Length: 292
Image 1 (cartoon, rainbow, N blue to C red):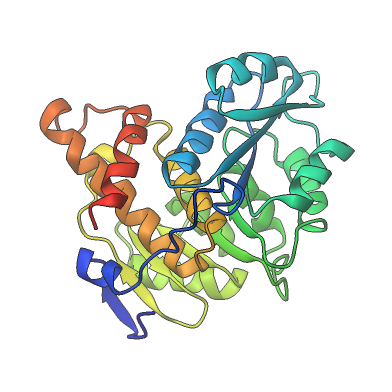
Image 2: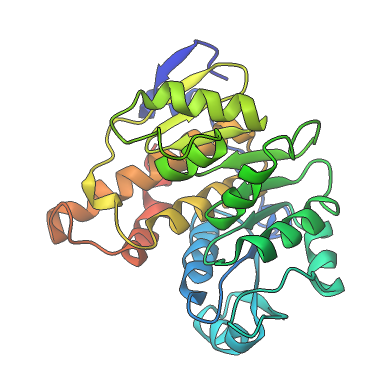
């Protein structure tokens, strides 16, 4: 494992930090559970879930609003899909049903947040899932799950799970308690490190990865095209898939951030720097990981 204080992510660094390969048994490659969506945003869960499979996870489970579960099960036939109670406005309700908690208790990695759109309901849901996770489980918090965490930044203190946070700069500001003072022009290494220390978790922020102990990595090949709708859902899913395979959180964040960026690079010659779609990243992830 790299131990220098600040490193640049390169194929050479990743080769010296190899991922666990696993066996032909899908259970050995890990189970990912993605919890998210709303009546209007089930696609976020699709993107994160398929990304987890492309990253090498063996099994996929998706938990979304009741009204979208059937459609999503058809769109992602590789996944087991369950419906969750929803509010009158179509958000996932915070009252976690037993079936969800049973899945979370057995999952090797859980991603919470893609497509969620109600912070109060998300906070209740997050609390219930955190209390049921296995000590060795991986956990990715994205989008509204990060908003819920910003209300209680010490929520993860003392928890043994392998946690990665995937904020944008606005979410990073909220996590630091100063939402109006963090921008893309800031020292992202300093911001990511501050979030990592405050939340006791590994953070990946626009190509900068920080661990709570002060180690920092930079992925320098990401480009403007990654700033497209759904791109963050893909990143969260890739990291969840790597965690399910047994990667440590810093390793999963570094490999996942690199694979996300290089997948975008591979699409740019065909679609231009800013013309590719998040769903097109999915078909590049497995090849990109396999070329290291």
